[in-house]
Image (cartoon, rainbow, N blue to C red; front, side, top):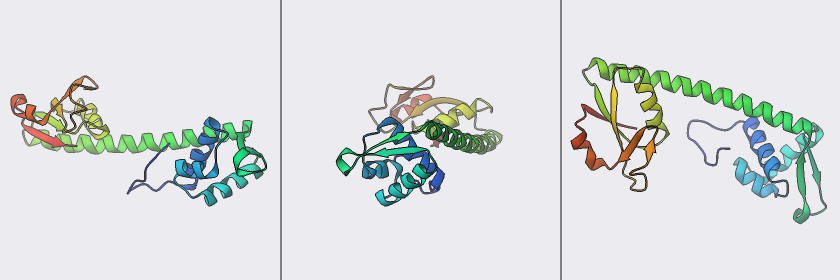
Length: 178
């Protein structure tokens, strides 16, 4: 699940429940503090979520002290986790589609202005999405560069990541910073 906070997307209660259920499924002998760290909520909120999920029949909790407490998903809990996962996945895929359409629109604007060959500066998910989207336009991605020397020589899809010093030799019409 998400392990950092984002500026535009605040995880919902459903997302936190999904995170807690996923963690319990993978690590039944865990603490509420550890669950909270994974779900990006306080251990008090985890306690509230677990209490709710026990009442709803999604989780069982056993043990007498913090040191020997363990949590288990019931069949209903596994089903709830799967349901939340697929709801979350659908929304992420819809966002992906929206971003892809926005990138396509912007690439088409570049194409209309005469840009045909580009280098992407930044070898991360945004660059990958731009590269994939470029295939639907007349723009050709001729290289991907990144400042991170650990990425040099590795592949993003079918392109090898190069250092920024390679830009000149590639002779792009433009460099798109991702």
